[in-house]
Length: 76
Image (cartoon, rainbow, N blue to C red; front, side):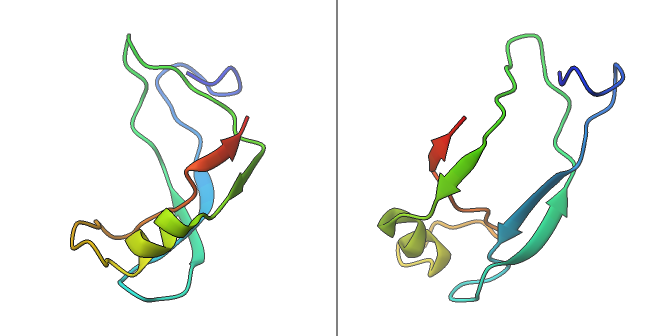
């Protein structure tokens, strides 16, 4: 759990998300589920969008769940 959050609460996450296939990324906010006893929280300082993310944004593999927050290339 984040050290900045009171116990039992989660801070909102601000990101960019594709809300449907082949749509541009738009600002998106969500509140994550609380961390469980076997979960860890990682702070990410930077990320990039790679070619795999583009396939997922366009749903070219027919498996994307929207909204999608791409960026599997992270630095934290």
